[in-house]
Image 1 (cartoon, rainbow, N blue to C red):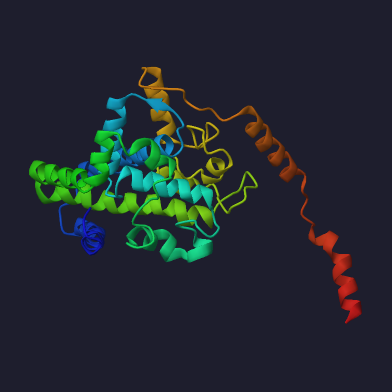
Image 2: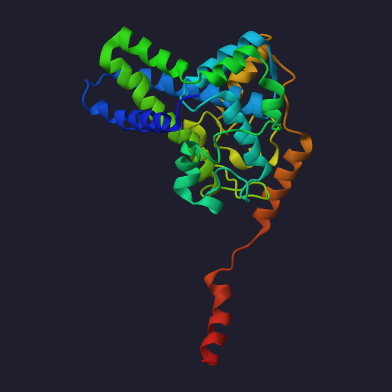
Length: 298
């Protein structure tokens, strides 16, 4: 484990280094490099850290699990068990005391970044956490948890040796920054802005913009309604890149026991949609008698 002051310094150094895009040549190929680095690691985070470790939404073999966990760890968002363990706690205490990152409880900045950099309250995940209990003894996962700094460092060095500063900046610095905020936005933006299909006990919301940049995670109200599902976009029009990846893995036998959204949850969604459609906002004409009475009372 790196000293926290070093972790915080490296985090902010990488965040600021994204500005180097203005100091290196622009090529459309570099934009493609950014997209591959951002979205591949985004899928890794949500497929391995989130839907596999935290929610057991599907099963995959040991080799596939290691590859996706390695890709996710290269996102520079600490170790898989730390990440998934805190996410379990988020659901356990969503938008209540005990939630590591609720903007309602701790404010926007702390919920977005502050909790991630905190070395006292959130440096460890309790031993009773199901993620720690079930995966901490798997050797390759424990290694990635302990040496979580190695995959992003290896990625950065590989990019630099392959294409120099432009590849390092467009393939590591910029996408690591955009991916960090795409992930953190699920904790903040998706508890403040968006639509609520389901009346959950928290402030989770669906937001198509965050869903795009976080590879499907932005359908957050869906997810809080039924956490076990392998898909967060419950309908075909809700873009969920991670779900498409899991489906492709299942098609070739790399994933199985894929958890579906129950029929009762879809029925609940249809009922909620129908109920909202019957609600009629009063028109200006309807409001006129009330306005006249209010004027007479003055």
